[in-house]
Image 1 (cartoon, helix red, strand yellow):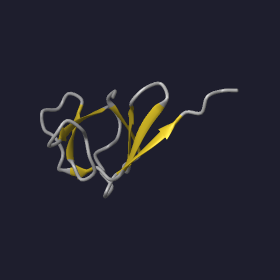
Image 2 (image 1 turned 30 degrees about the horizontal axis):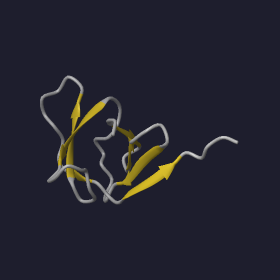
Image 3 (image 1 turned 120 degrees about the vertical axis):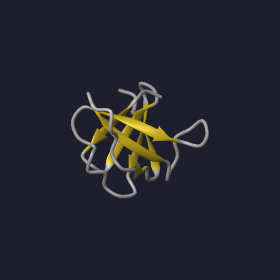
Image 4 (image 1 turned 30 degrees about the vertical axis):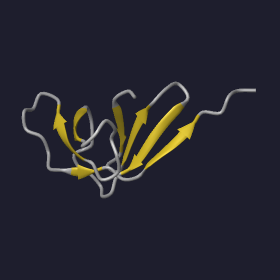
Length: 82
């Protein structure tokens, strides 16, 4: 998977391939998700899962935000053009 993109304070998208994306609606809003930020994910395995925590690091800063939590992940596939 490629790195995540945030949309607002409640949605994170991971692009798995040219055809599939995974969308996570966060468990609660994460007010630190804006602009050019880096996610520091605290996962306990080889995949990012629902309820895993992450913190947000603003570009140029050494101090990360408080914890936010991933919600469920939903896959979306691009439909082939006809």
